[in-house]
Length: 75
Image (cartoon, rainbow, N blue to C red):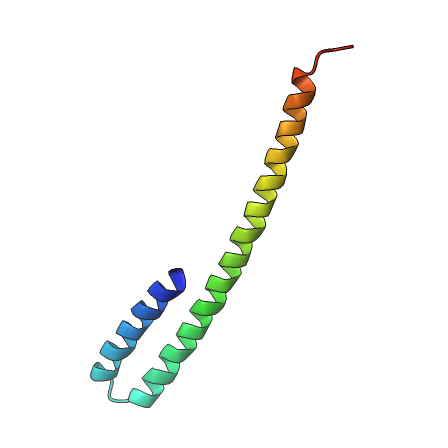
């Protein structure tokens, strides 16, 4: 979803930028580079989100174990 939004935004910038800039080829290349950089950043953020989701799940499991230990009757 984020990739689509970035793509649509950059495509809009690309199309509007080409009409205003006399050096269209340079502008196109610049926008293509910006799109690639944005996609790399998005992929890095998605990877980070996945890592955080895994860490969150692990921490929740640890909390359940601790809670069970606290709730267990002492022998």
